[in-house]
Length: 244
Image (cartoon, rainbow, N blue to C red; front, top):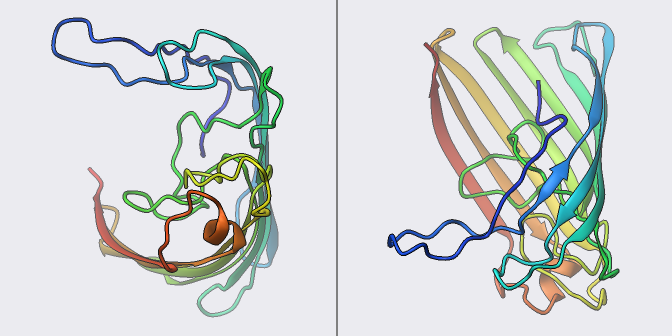
């Protein structure tokens, strides 16, 4: 199972209470996120699919400042769809076409339309977690093609190609924090190429996971006013998961 369903999330941005501790400041959101999901599991010689749609409503502040006391009406959405086919041959190759669409914030000062991911792992479709996390379910449109293999029950691998676009060119892109309020930097953020290999070192107990992500910057990530003056990104990782 993935991500989130209906939720109610009240939060407050708080001042120092005199204890020497300081709470994490947020946009003081009060959100309700209903949604649905249809899913068919992958099997050899069979089409599989997944469709999910979520709508977000409620109230949120525009900033995390404690002086911001103006509630904005929230109207945001997220759509995920994919279809795959598994071939009944050696290594069980599977081809998957995928589409993710998450709304960004508009220029209307009276509403907040950027989808809030709330909680849930990026790893399922968007890339590895930890230090890397460019792709996020906020202000993003991204089709994907992925090729998977499962040579045996103890190891599998895939490679995926994902172009990245902004849903709203005046909002910050996904989790990057990069923004052009004028929209003149366009809506093409770049391209992500991802590979992953998993191996059960001890079946059902110890899983090894490694992979590499390569992000080729597009016009937006190169020319937006606060875009960092860096080159393309390589990210590699190695991790283990213990099950007990």
